[in-house]
Length: 196
Image (tube, rainbow, N blue to C red; front, side, top):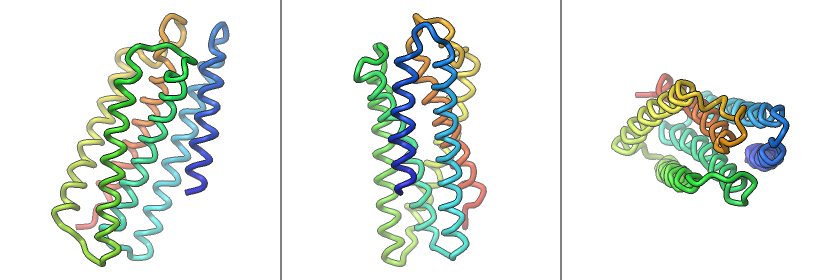
């Protein structure tokens, strides 16, 4: 958990600095994108290693699913903090930022709650089939949603908006794109490796 926390703190600080330094220097937008990409790559590696370790030790399906939900929640929380710091503090101005912040908070909360419920079942030595099935469908839903987000951002040209300084949502788009890619990879892994 310490590595996850350190990644969030360092990456959000770097995202804020690079977003604030974008004016007149497009290289800062590239640096912002690189930070978002790198931290999400680290998140994916940490999540997959943690989940694979549980599978290797013969952990219950509930424990494995709980681990996956926790990893997803951390990526959503990273998005919440990143948007709040960049837009909530006024580093960049964007009217719609708080809508996305609330949506991210809601999904992060659902992932945290699911992880807690699944972990309780795991700690009690039980596998709740209904809860596991709901979690599986939620994972499929998130995967579909993440694919839509990634493809939508690319088709709409949102990932190159940083070239025009009047568009201030470019830093949020980096968070959306790379966070969605990370969650999508994790969801795909969990679906493919689901134990029946």
